[in-house]
Image 1 (cartoon, rainbow, N blue to C red):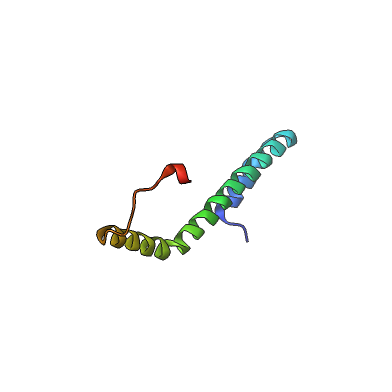
Image 2: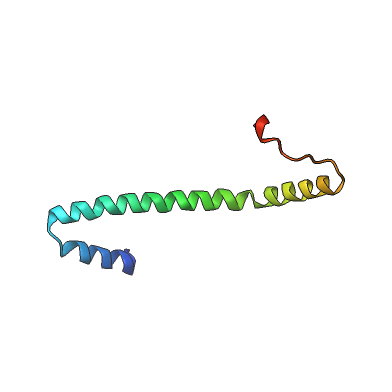
Amino acid sequence: MASNAVTTVTQMMESLPEAMQDRVVEHLREYVAELQDELRWDIAFNNTQDQLVAAARRAKQEIAEGKAEPMDLDRL
């Protein structure tokens, strides 16, 4: 069963000439691909949050203990 949004888009598309429908479909493909990329990024970021927090805490502790050194950009 199609959602209300899908039904609305379908009705909008049906009101256009076929050539325009093809153009809209191509734009939708690109847009949906971008949304899927963003979703994958969000999932990956959320899955590493705990690790990022732990790394930040370790860095802060090392700085407090005098174990950290300024980053030498020339060594990168």
